Image (cartoon, rainbow, N blue to C red; front, side, top):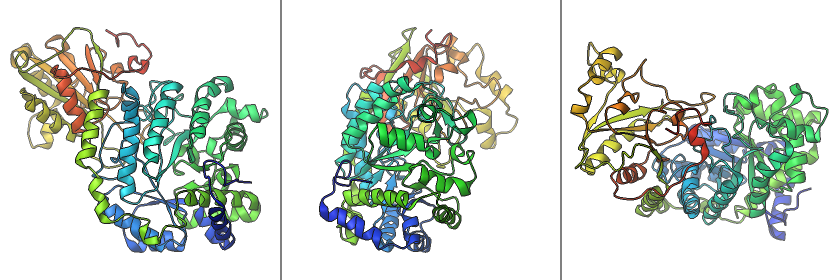
Length: 579
């Protein structure tokens, strides 16, 4: 059974007694509720009365909103919870992503590209401070996947790098920064993303490495971070055929399951060989990577029986709670497995001091919100951006560009569609224009046919725009072209690439033969597969003002490039990417 006196819980006798007494006092329905983490999709108090008060969930994660709204929401949730809640956030980029007014420091890839390992620490520290200020105590981070396949975009910017060494070094520093704020970490996504090119939000994906190669890469990452004290691990809906067959040689191809449903991966490998004593939770349970594996009524109890302690998100609360109850009553989930899961859930809560903190102190006062988006945190973001901005190539020595030598800039924006967060992906272009003008350039922003039509212009189509843009007078109008690409997103397609606005779109860098052209990626590292013709490529890692300002400073030569890149930028050495 679980030893709560050992890492990562390290509980004293009084805390262990609280865990045991609390479990013993629970009804079966209360025990079942503790195994679920709800995605709070409403800020209405009656909603929380139902989810937290009636169903008694063990944890919550909220949808994005401003920090004041979220803090009050969490405060009310804790006030109606019989057992204090684990309150999760996704501070992968700092405070941004968890709250609308949070600080965007950089991505994991940005922190992995910095010459200073402590930029990963700063990323965890700012993210932890800003989410703790609203009442969170649990971070679904760091991401410890290894970006081995350049086509993989679900972790393209969300991995520290393409090898175990950089992931281990930077993930430890992220954890150290986060831990200073009192939050627990949930590293993800075991058994490891980055081999398959697809996204488990829309399909089950697979880590197909053999055991020895996995053990020397992903396995080493998990061993190191477990030893470093990480309290919980999120399991990906990722199958691992060779790993599963190491423990179950008889498994057929059809019997290979995603790790969330595979006891050989959770119990034999993660608990057994890797010695993990902390809490295990599933990734979001509505992801197709899980739902395609078996019926929901089977999958809910199967995940707990396989070794997951907590189940991330309901599809329907009444249904899912009923499925787990039926699984317990039928023996799919044994009494011992249920008790083990509860012990780890309450053990994690006790390790955070939730069992002794006065209920009214579980969420900081409103005055704590002043740290969110603070001048200090913005300054950290600016310093990190200055170190991380990376020059991938400049094969025709176009840089630096200055207002004195290239005063007239044609500015293009390559924008992905808004993803499931609803965030406007196009605001970066106004920032880029402002920062270029601030540097002294005369900026001419390109608008494609669709944008011009949306503004009410008549008689404009892609071929009329092409005729206006692509002609022999281009170099008479502009001295250089700069393209900012903000192509992000995951969860809605298996992979992400540039999608131009129209056929033969005028923003495609045809103009590289006319004027010096600089392509800046604010997100994905694999754009050279789509724009191999550009001779100057910069990676900036974030669509923040701090990152864009630092990029412009480096374009003009006001500061030096110090960031680094890994081999994924060459897209498997597709012909032309290095030219």
